[in-house]
Image 1 (cartoon, rainbow, N blue to C red):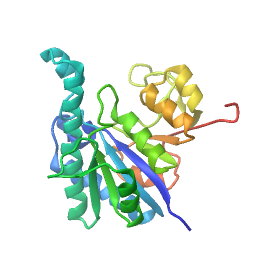
Image 2: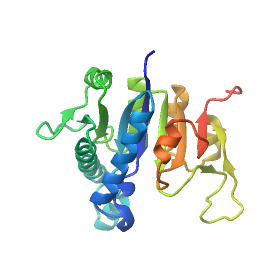
Image 3: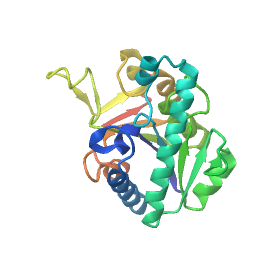
Length: 241
């Protein structure tokens, strides 16, 4: 029976721990343990896409007067720093990994080549994707959707930092917000719900890729989400689409 292929999208802030800035070694170790537990428990091939918000954010660029394209490239380099940190934590606990980057840095990681990534999956390695799409003006959410489409993943697990699913409005600002257990891609796009950027959501919709949004700050949730426990919100194409 062929293994299911999945993508996990981690925010950069999740790697920073309580400080919200930089890479916290203890936090990264805990995330690595959670990914290993999921890998050991589920019959699947795992790709991980990491953000870079803990290293560099757009607001910083704006305050510093940095042009958008340059700022985006700085953020992409930040995602590579995070990918290398996660790789080393995973390999320290016995998980074979490869980091592949869309920006060519051959001294530290492999360039992203689709067929090579597929080969790593087939050999049982977790593949961590750094460098975003390699182009400015695209988020790491879009990277997750793009890699899922290219590599035949059936679902993107959006591991949120403190948000346990999709709501009709911001739950932090509205006490009467309602959480969805299930929702369609079309409803996400029409409603402007803050799940992932619209380019990523449209790419998942067009390629029939499910999205599962959950809170990664609860210990064990990565494994629970992948094993199908109802702890977040499932987004998939509906019959009306």
